[in-house]
Image: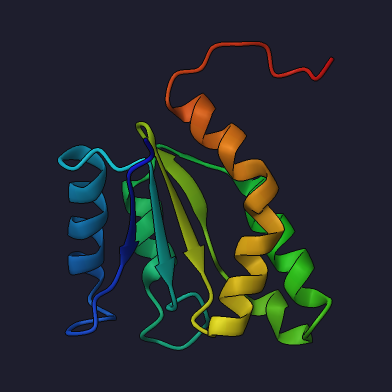
Amino acid sequence: MMKAGVLTLSDKPDDIDLIKERLASWCDERGLDLIVTTGGTGLSPRDVTPEATLSVIDRRVPGMEEVMRAESLKKTPHAMISRAVVGARKRTLIINLPGSPKAARECLEAIAPALPHALEKLGGDMSDCAQS
């Protein structure tokens, strides 16, 4: 059974140290398979979610980042300023989504087909990735 979390920091949403601590704790102590954040991916001075995510992940998953931006660009040119990050820390996948509920839904829908496979691989599945 997959263990997932949604990072909600309504009390201090733009506190980079709190975001980093929460992400690391959820990966290392709770052993979550998936963490999804919303918001903080733009260019305003308080948008620090990508920096927090980058500081805790072991490796990026740029294909998912690219797909989310490409899908968003179909709707708005503002998508090109998104700094959303997708990456893995140990066996946890962390996905930064935009703050807009509509944009977050669209981005998640765009990468949803690859999520089960990505989570299986992070979980240790060593089977061949090639489709027959």
